[in-house]
Amino acid sequence: MQGPCVLNTLSEVTATSRHYVDRLFDPDPQKVLQGVIDMKNAVIGNNKQKANLIVLGAVPRLLYLLQQSSSSLELRTECAVVLGSLAMGTENNIKSLVDCHIIPALLQGLLSPDLIFIEACLRCLRTVFISPVTPVQLLYTDPTVIPHLMSLLSNSQRTQEYITQIFSHCYSGAPDGSVQPWRHPEHRPSVRMQALKCFSVLAYENTQGLHDTVLVDGELDQPVEMQLTAAKCLTYMCRAGAIRTDDSCIVLKTLPCLVRMCSKEHLLEERVEGAETLAYLMEPDVELQRIASTTDHLVAMLADYFKYPSSVSAITDIKRLDHDLKHAHELRQAAFKLYASLGSNDEDIRKKLLQNAPDEVLVMASSTLCNLLLEFSPSKEPILESGVIELLCSLTQSDSSALRVNGIWALMNMAFQADQKVKVEIVRCLGTEQLFRLLSDPDTNVLMKTLGLLRNLLSTRPHIDQIMSSHGKQIMQAVTLILEAEHSIEVKEQTLCILANIADGNTAKELIMTNDDMLQKIKYYMGHSNVKLQLAATFCISNLIWNEEDGSQERQDKLREMGFVDVLHKLTQASDPNLSDRAKTAMQQYLA
Image (tube, rainbow, N blue to C red):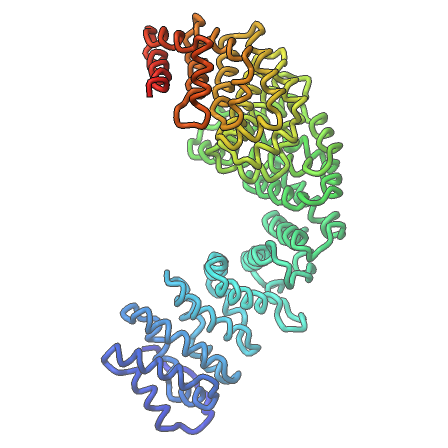
């Protein structure tokens, strides 16, 4: 049991109150639990009963039971609830509870994995801390407390509510705002740092109670970590609508501070955080984008994000290399978010970005983006949301073939297994005119990647049918031109694969079936000397005659009349096993 604590004699001790306390010492755990539950019911709204129980020593026993690992979770939770009720009495009650060291006991309880118990402890802590008689510095005694409270913020609505109330009281002081203990000059920087971090968490997307920007405004001339966290606070407050985007603390302090964080003098982690926060700050506001695009050579600074690590051979420490390579990926990702945010709302800024950045940087940047946008990449979703499609479509119009390749390659990766919304946005932003201009690009790599994009756009039946219903005529025209022109085997194979995808659509396949010239081309490639082209063309016919689909009988009859069955029969004897298998599968559709 805990040692004695200072108690205030408040009222006469009644026999009933003593009975409640005595039951807390019963050797039967079940009777103890029932005693605590009965005590809970007895003290609700009864300040006299609360005072009596405190005088009789109920608090040390409840705290003992709360901290014992042998106590059941239900008993520990009920103890926390009763202590919370006792705290809701008079200020003298709070003093008694604090003197009995209730705060460290409840903070220890927050380490429990059980959410209901944590909520009960937090509810009691909230009641204790919002009392003017509780010394707020008790929250800072253990440096691990604030980070742990922050980690609990998102556990439930209740944890968020209680922790927010604790923070708002301990960081803002008295209701009139006259005391701000965490800004006290004697406070350790680590305490102030934790306070700022808490405030930034509370500020994120929260419009309530964030108007007192004086709290953090003065921190921007502090050490780097403090500056960065203060800038994050102001950013979140601005995005939450608590500060206007044209406020001087945003334009003259926060934005320049975040731009400074992007320079290579800072640590990698600071540069990543600076770029991501700046991107978030500017995202909805064109004027901030304009200011940032002309501030301290920001575009040139971002170029350095893609040159890291500059020399692997110069790094002898393997651990350092591993760390740097990990952050190199984060740096590039942060730079993309910022590039995209800079150009998300204004065509002029986007063009100036593209013109001012050296080609070598854009090539390196867009190459990285190609990898980031692969379907399995975790960075795909935030990048999609940041307006980068416009940026990539602009790259496809570059005079540099390397940039055209990377722009269309990144769009191809973006379209891979994407949902319909993303595909429609790519087609809308790129425009059919530019898409078909790229299909006649003199650079084979550009042509191949454009065909890859088209193939990814034309995957899954609803997508195929939708895109072909709006752009079918132009796509069929482009396919015809490629199949008729002098192109490599790879280009023609990719084009036939697109045709096979179109043949897999429900309504789109009619664009092939009603085009006898196209059917003759498919037949020609089925008899080609190159197996890859034969396979792709046979795959196309297989999709057209598949039995289980509406209208398959009519399609089979037409293709039989055009001599396709004879070609398929011949291919069943092909020396290439894949080709003969594909032909046999197609023939079975006629026999079924």
